[in-house]
Amino acid sequence: MANGNFTRVTEFILTGVSERPDLQIPLFFVFLVIYGLTVTGNLSIITLTSVDSRLQTPMYFFLRHLAITNLGNSTVIAPKMLVNFLVKKHTTSYYECAIQLGGFLVFIVAEIFLLAVMAYDRYVAICNPLLYTTVVSRQVCFLLVSLTYLYSFSTSIVTSFSVFSMVYCSFNVINHFYCDIVPLLALSCSDTSFPETVVFISASTNLMFSITVVVASYFNIILSILRIRSSEGRKRAFSTCASHMTAVSVFYGTLLFMYLQPRNNHSLETDKMASVFYTLVIPMLNPMIYSLRNKDVKAALKRFLTNSCC
Image (cartoon, helix red, strand yellow):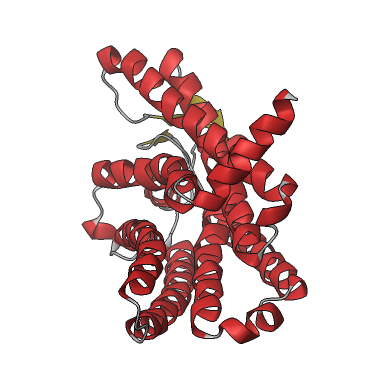
């Protein structure tokens, strides 16, 4: 767009999940329940893996941080979305939008790499059990998690800066329920080739690296499990991996669908539904998938409730 007279955007309007007035209240209660379950489930995991002495292992250490990222990701999105169901004017300030995008990127990138770290942890535990305590020591766990958060924070700053360095003028309606990259760039009245390149390189590199780690880890895990002579042992090992692999496949598949397609092939309505899934539904399901069906966690929950009542 050529330089000229225009009004810079100081606030954005979010269209939300649906623009139909008759659906606002029903959707409010649906997403309130989803967010409530997300908070309850993930806070339970964080608390149990922090206070129970029998859950002080690398697997539960990483699970605690996965719960933190799930809770953070959902909390960055859900409260604002719930408020918008109840008010007529769905506005968000320019800087509030930037902060929301930045927070979302911190937690989503951290989750991508934590899933890869957890797959590597399971690989070492199953394929090299005698070296497990050495390879995945407390120091290594802290290092892996610290690097994950540092990298996700750096990625968030670079990507958010590239998106909000664009000029936004006049039209300010974001066809989404939160400030996401694709609908934001669609509003820009300046050349978006630079932020699009940054986003594509960052997203593709992050996803390909983490997916490679997950696939390589589980390929070796499956080979090791197939060598187990006991059918009961194989069944138990497969059952613990199946839940993780299901969640990983859904999560990575959704992100690949969202961010690794050309812009002219994007359907914002389809992206919106996919975003609901990985920002709100998956954080609600993860505590159930990873731990609430886990005997150790169930036992820890019983001990915690018993001690609390005494």
